[in-house]
Length: 195
Image 1 (cartoon, rainbow, N blue to C red):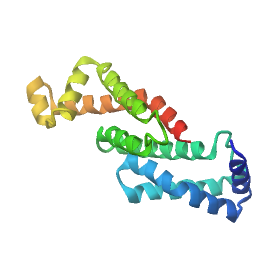
Image 2 (cartoon, rainbow, N blue to C red):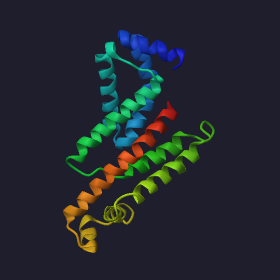
Image 3 (cartoon, helix red, strand yellow):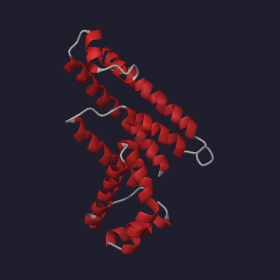
Image 4 (cartoon, one colour):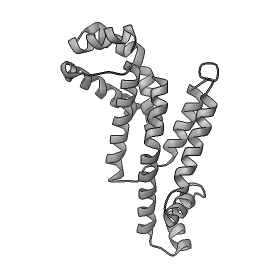
């Protein structure tokens, strides 16, 4: 943690206007980009970041940040996005394209001039996704690939595989949950690199 972070964190705990101004000036836009990468919705991304900052203010006295401020904020935004997805899972399917969007954002954010390992990280992420897909249970993997890589509708998959549409939906939901858990640690380590 650098000296500037220490001062800002101390100011945040005291409710200092200066500290919250620093938070907005130096972290707001990057945090919105992180949230938007997950959510593909700029307004919702801004809402999540705004809520995070309000929450920081409300819980300022018990604020405990031991990592860099950027890493802490990115981790908090990521967790709020995952919480949003968790709620969304209960009512509708979450598209796997979120990972592809993150992949694209990673490439454009980790410019080779600033982060020489950017392309290596992107390839590693793609490999992790493929490995995670291959570890899915066989029927689940087949359903997932037909849905995501062959763009087949649930009804088509159900007919091809001689299973019900509800079973297809179950496999897709199960695959997304498994993939999210598998990739969770890896994505967190990338976010920590960006902090």
